[in-house]
Amino acid sequence: MSKHAQTFGAKQPTHQGGPAQDRGVYLSLLASLRTRAQLPVVVFTFSRGRCDEQASGLTSLDLTTSSEKSEIHLFLQRCLARLRGSDRQLPQVLHMSELLRRGLGVHHSGILPILKEIVEMLFSRGLVKVLFATETFAMGVNMPARTVVFDSMRKHDGSTFRDLLPGEYVQMAGRAGRRGLDPTGTVILLCKGRVPEMADLHRMMMGKPSQLQSQFRLTYTMILNLLRVDALRVEDMMKRSFSEFPSRKDSKVRGLGWSVYQTGQRARPGRGGGM
Image (cartoon, rainbow, N blue to C red; front, side, top):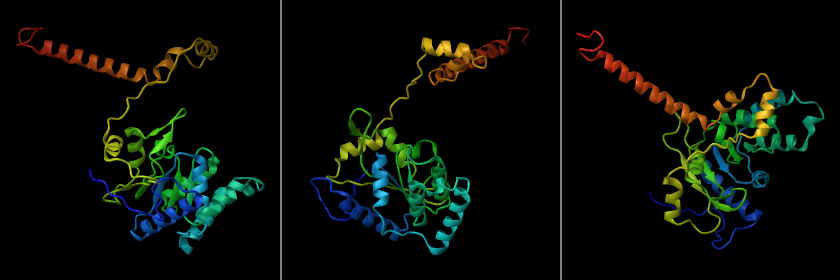
């Protein structure tokens, strides 16, 4: 594994810049990706506020052709017709519509469900060229891009800031490269300050993924609530938990092994009426 560093926009090695510098960095980066035909790109940002801020700051960026703008406009009209007239005038709806017409999109938990669905469908059609998203976009939505950009290597996990875990990195970086379209995918780490050490990059990219652990906790309150519902049994709820899955898998393997053993015993000569 080798490390390659390239500068986009004004260089400030000692500290992160403000919105103006970030805007310059992204404009330079996206212009470079556009020139190299490496769009569409998903920019993973670990803050809903920064997703909105980065997309809103690119007011001068327009990535769609006139025919694409027309297609996006008609698609928005059909989808937003499901909303009431007053809801179609919500600030978020108007702002997202304006971004989408220019080939930009935002995807995080603070976006209205209908808008997230619109963004996903336009992205899958190749009409969203730049998508600013939180890591939830990489969890349940199969939306690969040609390029993935990490706005940062660090995230807040609810208690402290830390580097990305190998599993988190792979989950998001794996969106780079569209099957059947791109021979390779491009992953870019956007370093606002110093370039990370090779050892840190190797640990994040090649390290062993964390073990999955079930978060299911059976409590007395849960048992009592389940007893009130005739359609659900406590046993059924426990069978659906992640912690039960490995146990059931192991029991099936043991059962299969026992069946193979019994079959082998019956097939041996001189046993059970054999030859």
